[in-house]
Amino acid sequence: MYSSNASESELMKAVLQPLLNDFKHWFGRSINLLESEAINFLSEREQEELLSRVRQAQQLVIASQSLSQATGNQAGVDMSVVMSWHQLVHECWNVGIRFRQQKAQAAQDNLNQDN
Image (cartoon, rainbow, N blue to C red):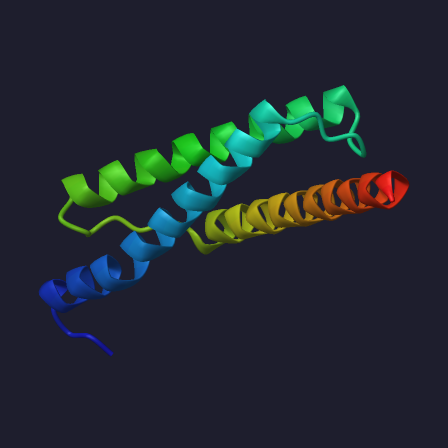
């Protein structure tokens, strides 16, 4: 257990900042995918809704980073918020994995047709 604010601040910096950077990275990748590709297993509405949720989460991550930095790492993020971001990243990973699998399968099918 940490007894001083300086130690808590260092712990927040060591744990929270990398976590927020990871969320920002994965949300950014997800936005790129959802903006640039038609995901055929999602309806247009589902894809737009997912994109909207990811954009909103990314803005919250950026705001959390700014608040943490402005307060000298004294501000944290509620665990329920972190878990909701984690679930959203997991949902995006699943979409990305399925999309890449279908793309690879389509490429393989095209290759087989050419032979």
